[in-house]
Image 1 (cartoon, rainbow, N blue to C red):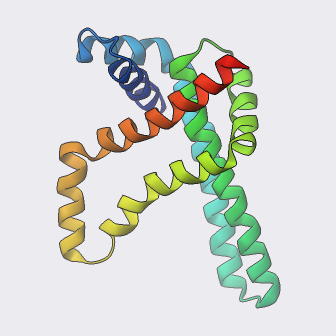
Image 2: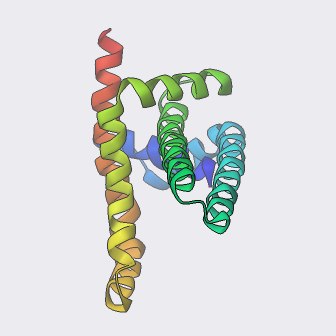
Image 3: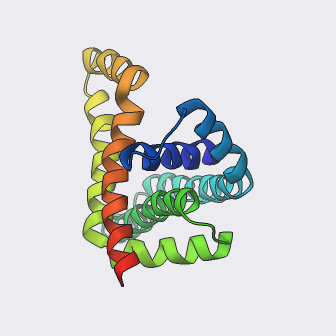
Length: 172
């Protein structure tokens, strides 16, 4: 999943900047080049997501009123930054040649430094999922949306935001 996400970003960056030649060839080339970092990052993100999910379930089962709400908000903020760091990390892997530790460090700094953009990108990613889960009709429409253009459309929008952020950073 991680290598394919980085490859998707890589191809989308090239499509937006009109640098592409063959989409499938570019995807598999980027997949091969980003496999090690993307997979390691994905396993790390998966591990963190499993821990956070277990924490959410434990807090819900404990039945703590005020303290439970505070812990829930705290975990929600951590969840937000884990997702944000993951978004930035895959884009950095696709765009730059950095070590994995540099990717994570820069993703962390960008998540905090570009907080409004981080919030916007997470909103763009989560809105279709939330709209899909409203009822059976929206679930079926959402599945059709994702199978046709959903993932690439969302990636296209997010890559425009990333390119804007990276353009700002390249000027600094």
